[in-house]
Structures are given as C-alpha cells and as structure tokens.
Length: 347
Image (cartoon, rainbow, N blue to C red; front, side, top):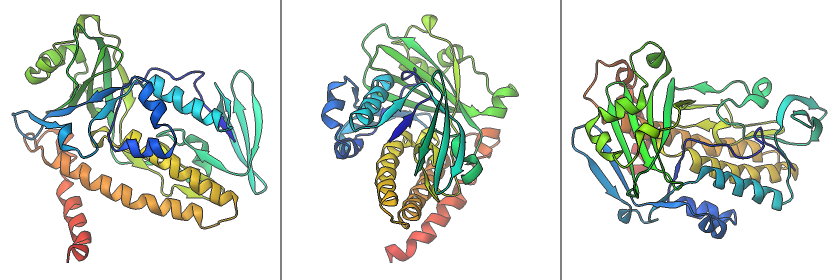
C-alpha cells in the first residue's frame, strides 16, 4: 500500500473537537492507548447562543460516552500517518496524485513532488478532502450543498481556559470558539462566500468578536492584540454522487463533507476510512459487491446529516430577511420529509 500526502509534515489546522463516541473508532483502529498519550484536552461542556438571546450549556456528564477532546490536530495527524506506516504503508510526502489514469484493470498514478514516482495500483482510495480531485474524471465533481466558508484565527491565552466550546448565531452567519491544547484560542466565523465578498459580512474577526457581548465574554481569556493572521477555508457540505466505483473508493470529505455545525467531519473521516479499508480488502479479494455496499451504507449517513443540519438551522428564526438565514429556510421541508420516511418505522 502506498500513501500519498501533499504535506511533508502535518500542517497547522483550524483546530477541531472530536466527540466522545470516537473512542470506539479509535479502539477498533488500535489507536486508543496511543491517543491518550498524546495530550489532547478534554471538552467538558458546550455552550451556545442560538435561536434566542439566552446562553444554553450542555454538560458532558449528560453524554453516556463522556467528554470529547479538543485536538492538537498536528499531533493527531502525525499519529495517524505513523500508524499507517507501522502497518506497512509506504508514505510518500510531500507527494500528490498529479495524473491518474486507468491501466488495464488497475491504475497508474504519476506522483508529483521532490521525488516524482510512477505507481501501479489495483485499487485507488481517494482521501483528498472536499475537492476529491484525483477521481474527478471517473467519479465526477462533488456537488456542493451551499457556499459556506470559515474565517478563523488563533490568539494566545492569557490564562487557563475553561474546557468549553462555544457557538453563537449572528445575522450574517455564526461564530465558533474553543481553547486549544497548545495554549491558544480559536475564534471562527462562518458565512457564505458571496456575502463575505459583497461586504454583507465583515471578516474583521477580532474587532467583531469584541463587539459581540456574549462572545466577547467567552474569549476574554485570549489576547486578541497578539492574534495570528486571519485565514479562510471552505466549510460547505457536499458529496459525490457515489462513494465507490470500479476499482475505486472515496472516504472522508472526498466522499461527503459536512457543515461544521454538525461536528461530524472528523468522526466521519475516521469511520469511512475504517469502513473503506474493509471494503477495499474485500474488493481486492474479489468481492464485486463490496464497493456498492460501502457506498450504499453512506446514504443513511447523509440523510441523517441533512435532517440534523436542517433542524439546527431551523431553530434560528430571528433574521428571516437576512440572506444567510433565508437560504436555509428550506429546513422545514427536509424535516417533514424525514418524518414521513420514518413514520412506518414508528408505527
């Protein structure tokens, strides 16, 4: 097995929280004990101002799986890369799949990078993220559900921060903040890309955060005067028409990506990576049904995601005339459709 990674080493990421239920996945992957040694911080509560002006706090004590974790994302990715290498994968980094072509019943990949290489493979797994670029000619382009982007920055903490993640809706999008294990605080704002370009949503994050009372109180432990540069990343949901085809699979965001409000992205990447590996082994052993079965198993995942996304956005009704929220007013139809589909099961 050959693993191509565009980055020579794990790069700085926005910072993510992994839900407590991921413990079962990490255990199944044989990574749980090592994960505990890596110093990720526990997340004991979630606080939100959404659908009204009063903050609501959900304590992890109410979760049967316990608290989640605020990840040191670089350390986590390094752990996964090392685990793959320990299992026998040949890691080429930095290297990208510059050209992908059919070669008989398999594939020929021209790997670009400091040491270009030609790779012959029987099976291709695309884990390249939202763009799903290596498979474009064979699987088509992912279909985006919206135009959500995220503007974010890190600011150093002046004091120890409470282990709380924070979400707050605003007229032109929504905020997210959390302390990170390395002594910094993440501050992020989500809006649609055209609203940001058109001036409908100012992306002066530090200034806007301090002008938002509840958020300002939450981030008071951070020194915003010493914040790093603001960065932008895609945050839209979307999916391929199918997550599998002849000789290939797509996993993680390459198969389907989620709005960060769902808090499902990293958990889904681990789950589909594990299940995709099982499907790949079966395909290589001659099981022609393994690929379609893997793709079919993801359909209810997307349906559940659409339902919960619609439910969460539908809770916020304070700005029905604002473009950001008006675009998400189709929530009621999605919820009604899901309820109709589940009615026979309840009966």
